[in-house]
Length: 308
Image (cartoon, rainbow, N blue to C red; front, side, top):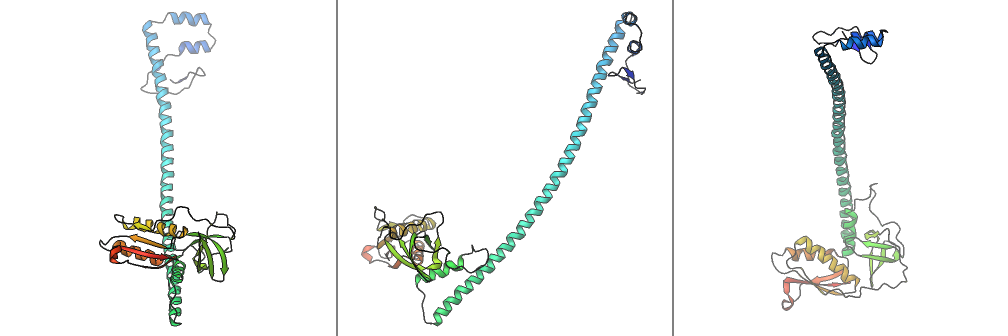
């Protein structure tokens, strides 16, 4: 028969197959039997009965502990199933979001492709119109057209035009190079830029306003680097990409320091470096002309250029 240890009262529940402790003395004490009577009765009990009662008490305690652990395990199982459900929902949401991103990237790729095609057609149309008028656009104009055709940063899809904020004293970067200078004069679509000690006339569309740099007054004298740019650059042993980066830095430094003539040694080899050098020189707005020197100065293993 069940017994509630906390209240000292029977629960009137019968549990089969489980031995129980004798609660007679406890019930007698709770019912008002004098204490000396219950104490005398307890002293008359045999030691074996007391040992069995102690064992049954520890067994009851162990059974209660196991029941509590079982209940705790059930709670943990419920929490684990809930966490598994949340993880499944999060996984489904992740895959759904990934599909949305894929679709968005595909749409953006198509949009950029269409915009690039549109601007390419506009650039080709401009070249065709110039050809029909009997004009041959110069190198700077070709660089500007190329920059405008490839500039896809305009999110509104508007044609790339002159950079906003062009005014005397504004710091700009020239398209197609890492050169920076200060605008000294704006004449319609043409801009005069002071790069080092040189004054270059470029298309307005080839000027990118450099933010975060304070503009300098036009009347301020720009002092070139005290160390003159090397007249010669050797690219032997460089990879094509490393050689391209070195050549672009070399040309920009030469312009800033006022060097008029430069020499690039690329060697003969397979001709890969030679073609790369010619490609960079053609695209650089400060290069007026270039050619291979005579055989006694390197011939086709070197290229000499004249800077404006």
